[in-house]
Image 1 (tube, chains in turn cyan, red):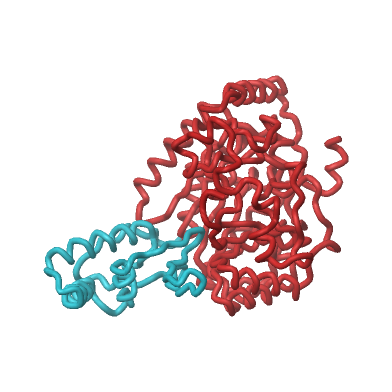
Image 2 (cartoon, one colour):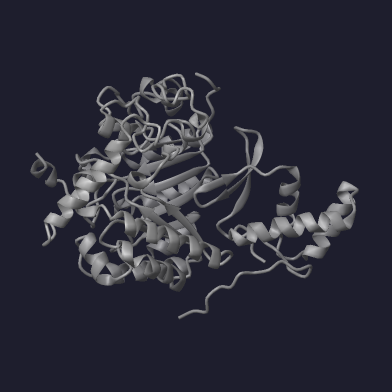
Length: 98
Length: 373
């Protein structure tokens, strides 16, 4: 009997990645990026896509937030709240691994 | 057409109607196709390639039992080469050692495994195949060993509705990412077996509460999708996301359909891949255009604020119960014959109760069609 998974909670030290059953793919027919997962296809907006692309399993959430704040010329605190909420939601749906 | 035609996103490929199980609610048609009617490898590969060109992003390989196709690895590789997300929907019986790992190697993205019961005796009885439960457990272990993500699919009816908490434990113990608690929909074989399958309303309500509590408790641990039974609903589901709106399916002989049961609508004629290209069928087939958008709708759908949410519900259910494929799905509380759904469930439950010994199932198999008369 294997140990059961537990719900993961996002922290600034988490290093998120996309699990094997989730992938980002450019769709030439619709000319947009799609996130493919079992049974569902998501069409992320530019910011969501930018967060997901940085989920490489090596970057911490803190590093991702700092990078996004710099790129979007936005206040780090506001970016942090949005990124953490986004990653928690996607982790709860098992679309992002923490 | 009230809206522009969009490219399809998903495709269900029924590679074969052959299956080692005989589940009495199978979504295949009553008239099953034999092996000699199945498309060959190259034709499926051509079809998949055209599907990818058309915009299909996800293909569900199903059946019957798709692993009975010896060329399944080749078909997966063909889809993977086109970047299509591939999902294998299997009963998980008699799959030779090493094949699941080979499917993963060929590019399979995800595996969905059915369990007819959470208890071995239930699984074996519903599928009419002794020892099947144990084989399914082994398939789940092999899928995880090959690194494949796993969905457990549990079709629910009155013979296993009380096992819902055990299905949740089973999915957790198998390390699945996802569990589908999918109540049987009464079309095809399930319609023929309605008297022996339909649960009581109280059991349906209990089940919905158990699932909702588990969804909340297990957020971030396992995804639980719940498909409630139509007959007990107030509003219809957006069946297939709307008729020929973003998905379609292909039968073993290449007939292209908007949904599983579409061939029960006698006025429609469906085309086969090969007679025409997939793109032509998707855009021009009169059967696909028959119920697209909202123009075809009658009242109360036509002026309903939900018309672009549920797209009028299920056309096949309208056909089966209202006798008119363009009628409002009778599941809808606004349907003039909605009361008939309540009468149907009451009658069905009475029929089941009268037969205390339990009427036998009409098991899914090719010769059973004649027995149905």
